[in-house]
Length: 225
Image (cartoon, rainbow, N blue to C red; front, side, top):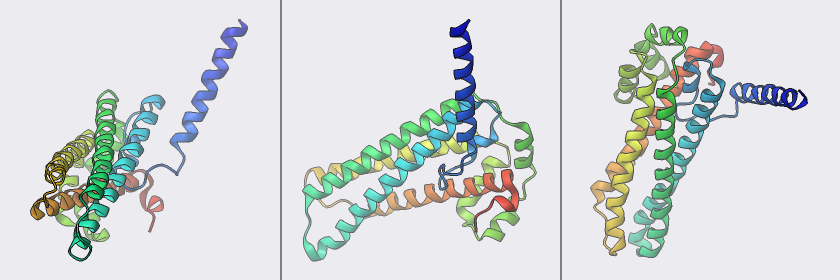
């Protein structure tokens, strides 16, 4: 009986910790944050999704930071010369972090697939005025149209899938750049442009999704100006 009582107390304690964590505002704010809130109130799965969102965003942003440093060294090479050993080290970090981001988004996608939606919040997504929101916020129309495609159908899982797919595409291009750097060959500048564009597009895509989720859940009071 004592052992059973201890187990009950532990379960209640863990439940309280998870509940506090789910309502804490220190979680990711940039890429698809609050997306976990659109799902049904399964504490364990929602906590896992929130963690994967944070992990994916953290690694993605670290990879982009590495890549921007790589571009900085490429840009400055005309003045300072090119150090391929340094470029290899920087690119290795960018690849490792993007691989970790891709893995996190895979786990997020898998967990979301096994978790039912909160239908009340899905209904809000279905009736959301996406066009006026985009205009009022001054969001990039070409990027926001993809958010509208997914969310006007209530397809939050599709947002997560796209984040994983984009991470994979960036990773493939980083390996192409690595092939050149490994043989001390200057990479094709057009590939560098395309990769930077893909990073930027994915960050905006995730941010715009987060802005919609924030507005759906909290309304204007929940938006940070």
